[in-house]
Length: 223
Ligand code: DER
Image (cartoon, rainbow, N blue to C red; front, side):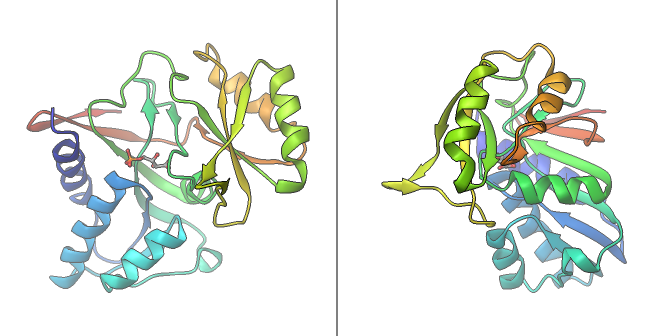
């Protein structure tokens, strides 16, 4: 299948939910790029929205498309967010963070009334975990956190960009961690939050209202 075409179809479906005068969360990643570009065209045609970007690179894309933006600290709630995912299950649990934006994405998702996830057909899984779980850690704590993850059955590797550690928009590291297939994502999510120095993880649970998955030349929705 043509995965990029599937992402485009899912994005086109998702942007149809947007209404005038809404505050719209703008996701990060290649699927979200299709959505932000579609929103740019709608704004060009007169759609009145204000965007809240989930990363510096999405902010820059939105600015280049003249999408009006709000600073997240001026926002009490977000009406609708369109974002991607690395894996999803039919009970709407996700792994996100492949693009390194998981912390800002989760803050935006937490503020969002209606979180719409758009993916190609390769992201649907029975169980989360084939995709290594992205975990954001402060550099000062990276070795400590990796040991703590090890004790919990996670094998972590610091994500690199060239020969240096990848840095998030916050200047933190990402530790991509292999827990194998995850039987109880909620339990793991809770466990991870007890580790000092771990500032975010890519398990998104009870944050998603709908997944729109591109499939061939159509889309399928999961609610
Ligand atoms: O980083 C993220 O969570 C992104 O949403 C990302 O992982 C999804 O990526 P894709 O849309 O480029 O497949």
